[in-house]
Length: 354
Image 1 (cartoon, rainbow, N blue to C red):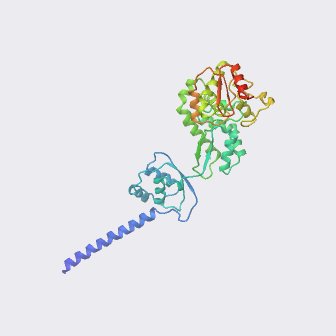
Image 2: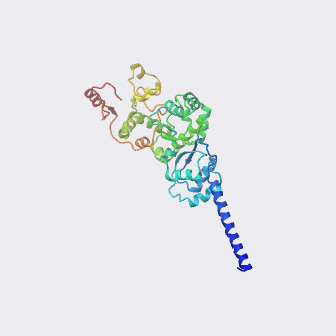
Image 3: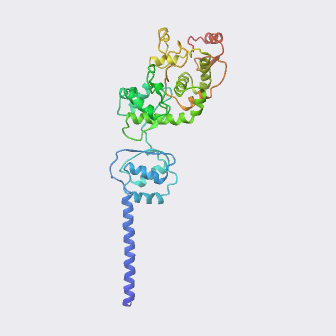
């Protein structure tokens, strides 16, 4: 081999070695850059991926949560990873996981990583019960939560931030200002130790969404938002989903005719109880929440509500009925006259009425 050819061959070999070295170095850089931020650290980091978030948006969320070691490598991974079904949810990850493990979990919606820490607020729960549900999942006490929700200066801050909260909730007769305003739903927690304010605003934001969707209909109903939620909460406590539109119609007929609602659940609320056998003395209570004694709506809502109950009130079933009761099987009977109502009660062998 001539000296020129040998020199050329050596140069080519050197180029090949350099290319291989670059590839190896680049591969190592990529592997390290998409590795775990802190191997062995299993401390849970809650990450919420909102619906419609793309791969780069998810990387921003993961980076803010401290789960990305190198953003450049993460973006390369997003481009070549084949992530075509990224699923919104709240996930439990850790800094001990690699980026590829995290992205695979999000791409498949892996249930093993979906956050199990949540707060369930059922419709029909009183505010004290909502506080208990929150306290059970957090490092907070029911009394701490209720004290915050009863703090008028705090409530005024919320009134300034949410269009549907008004000074109606601060009326002297209202038992708890935020009663009925925290939307009933399952809330997945996105931080380990959320504050009471975080939780409150999470529920109010959800209520904002539901009320905003129905804002024009509520305005057309003739009710203020406060009155609307008050009636919706009574309908919620008085009936099952199948009967809510009919029961709402009965209550609206009574309101239109100036007849007391005659609702035991509002009397129970005075005593912070649910369905119980009420005593005569309790039915005579002078509280403005006593709709067995006083006509019109009580001062405020008596429980948490959901959108279906709102719709039942907005689209109530029209009729001439002004009485109803549920028999022992839960079947609701409706009547136009008091005489027919009393006969129905007698026929069923029941003593309670509405």
